[in-house]
Length: 302
Image (tube, rainbow, N blue to C red; front, side, top):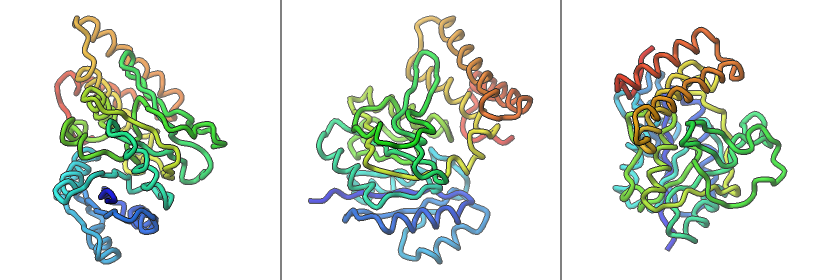
């Protein structure tokens, strides 16, 4: 029996990107998959436009923006209730190779210990240049990076293998993982939630695997303004600190303090390489650190 796959695409004020994404998904060759669009409280007319454009695709409407975490959780629950064996989470600002699901399922079906799979991701506007070919995340420093970032793909990352972290813009999870390790923690809202989820998956006994034959092209963080956005730096700092505390706390408080200081220092230094305006970036780093210590999570209004 061919496993049932549901693809969840979350839309927030981005119907043009979502239309292009869905049109690419309609060319997917996998025989037993369904698409669901979750609208995250859009105010640009997205629900009406998407309903008219894709009348046969379920559109789940949420009254407010629940972020990546909350929007995808709505879609995951909807899919599991309808018998999904696997759920693909796909950013709306992506397009996919027609075989990208076949490749993910092929790997997943070969090893029941696999709970999370992540695709090879290219830049949308540089289709042969890598954005993600596996990922790293340090529990000692909180620093995260994409393997292969900005490298031309010449087959140097074509091996299926375990990865320290997935890419949240294109990943597939199993029913078993969702039932045993739980869903995405919604207090993250956006950024670092997939890192937390993958750490919890591994603690529950699952593998997180990079599948290079599954290919996706990404417009890169359009919903938050991209890595040069001050919104990004706020959530990245706050949520990295939370992820480390939740998943790898040190025994003594002073150790956690100095690790947090290192995390904040590294993000401060990154302002010089990421193109974020320094004054505004420092303000967001301060706010993210402050809100972490105050226990203020979820969506932040700036």
